[in-house]
Image 1: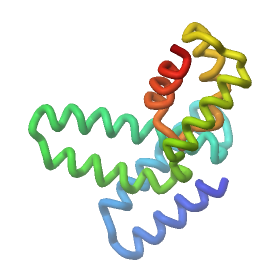
Image 2 (image 1 turned 90 degrees about the vertical axis):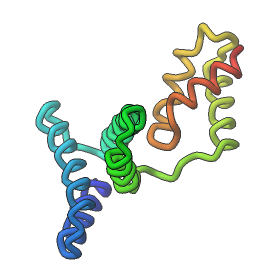
Image 3 (image 1 turned 180 degrees about the horizontal axis):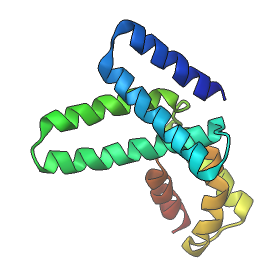
Length: 147
């Protein structure tokens, strides 16, 4: 629950400083967390919170692509600002070397030798890198290593 408590503290801080843009984004995160708790009747742990935040960032990146294609720089800037606030809840990102080493370890652990066994490796990798690396990037590196 440390991330949840941190979220509440950051919201209070944003309210005190009257930073409405930041407060709005933090409220969006809290709304997603509460939605998850109500829909699935679970207590949100740090791992679940990281998954929620990762999904929110991915959604915003998709929106940025669409807004950029429509020449809506104002909306692109807004989404990028939201990503900046939401990213505070993610753990430190893996470096390229750390990611590569983690993938190689998972390949060895799964005993994978071809791209057909990618699913087994991804099942091992996902809990280790969730929120710490872009899963699309992980998938492409894994595919290259198994090819």
